[in-house]
Image (cartoon, rainbow, N blue to C red; front, side, top):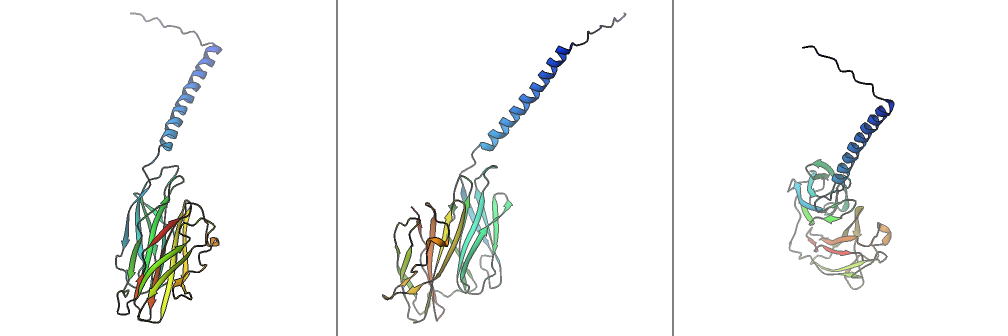
Amino acid sequence: MTRIPIERSPLSEAQRRKRRRLALLSILVAVGVGVTLVTYALLQPGPPLRILSVAVSPERPVSGETVTVVATVQGGTLLMPVSASITFATFFGDGGSGGGSMAHIGDNRYQRTLGPFANGTEIWFVVSAATGSEGPVISPEMTLDVGAVVRNGSSGIAIAQVTRIPANPDPLDTVVVTAEITSNSTMLQVSFSYMAFYRNGQGGGGGTMLQDPSGNWTTGRMLMPEIMPRFPGTVFFYRIAAIDDTRNTATSAVYNYTLR
């Protein structure tokens, strides 16, 4: 059988242009679909922002040891990732405050190392997390003793009748905290620490409380608006700690308020 070759007529210039346009259109459609799918995926909301757990190691640190805090946080998206921070204050053996960003170490975990601290120090800390659209969310507050902290000693030191004026402050108010502190010892050192949490950050501070003419202890005008940014919705935590010359200690409950 003899095969007869089929001659194909060459494409005209108009046909070639049409084919090029169709190929270009196919590419543009494919790119558009890809961009749409990627954009859709990026804009999907993540799970609700939550701090799932906070772990501390070692659980019973001694003088000179550092403390590692690891928080597991749910939430965030590729466009609005989670940022986690820790804020802490120390009492008795060491006194002060600090904190900052926690490093992401994978699997929704964030880590920060604190210390070392002196023997007899109590560490009070809170983890917070936020995204560009959510937060801050705040973990339950935690305390950790470094070495031996004396509590419930024979001096009977106690903190009571903690009051705050004004009760519902706004960003321009100066908040004054007063407490009644008793001890069989005549030598007392009383300190006040606070933490503040807002969308784009956190901070803390405090200082020594002074005794007023009535015998109560007060922050006076310690909490001035200039200390740190004040925004409506900022959440403040605060507590009082006292130590006497027998090294016996007492701490108040943790109080909080939100700027209206």
